[in-house]
Image 1 (cartoon, rainbow, N blue to C red):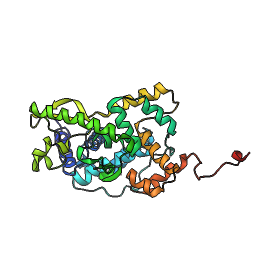
Image 2: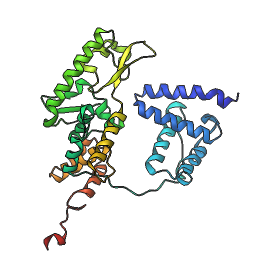
Image 3: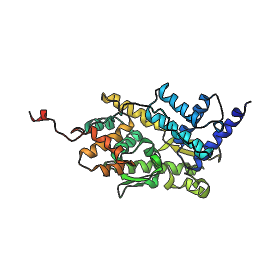
Length: 325
């Protein structure tokens, strides 16, 4: 067995531990580990400690030139390797100015009309319908909706607190009035399910960060339960507890795809399209772009500006002279 092969499991274990220490999301952890594995395999299983800027540049250039990946995909790979060298190996990368950056068209988002959104939501049922309503009515990303805890909802004030959204940022967004009664009825069913789980010796959920160790009793508390729990329980490998995870994203994604097909809308509409539509419809209603930026959780207003290109008045709010004929 070579040194690189012997060290690989240890390296990945260190990467996982560092991700948990930095409280990165599980999806980020999975993405980083995947890119690190690909990087090592590309260089014939050499240990990253024996490589540096040259090998990183070679791999990222390969992604752009041979694999034809998008700019965002290349940047995700770069983020994973920066994390590996800076946070895991303790030797930050130096000059990467020679990087050949992936190029691709800057795509404007697919946006649905209000009528199309209404048709799609009307064709969905159950929990998936309720999740989709929050994606459109509150501008949530799919995983932000699925990882909501009971304590993150304030039905009286009409607010949703998004914890550790993209980039680890918290924000407050709106809870649509139209969904509150349905949501209250849904929460009553979830609470009854939670009571049954507790009676059967379960009722625990995973807690973020160090709370698993500092406040283990919170795992069975109502406030920390998922708003959209999974239908089945699982047994935690470390504690042996019977727990519930949140609803799997594929449940909502499949329901959305079926609804789009059922109503015959000829657009490539996904769950994220509902978030795009939320932003666009707010701007069309006259809300200022800074307000929309805050609700979406964008760090830079330039990210939010892309929605000005899909307004029903045109990218600059210009009325066509043909409309005056």
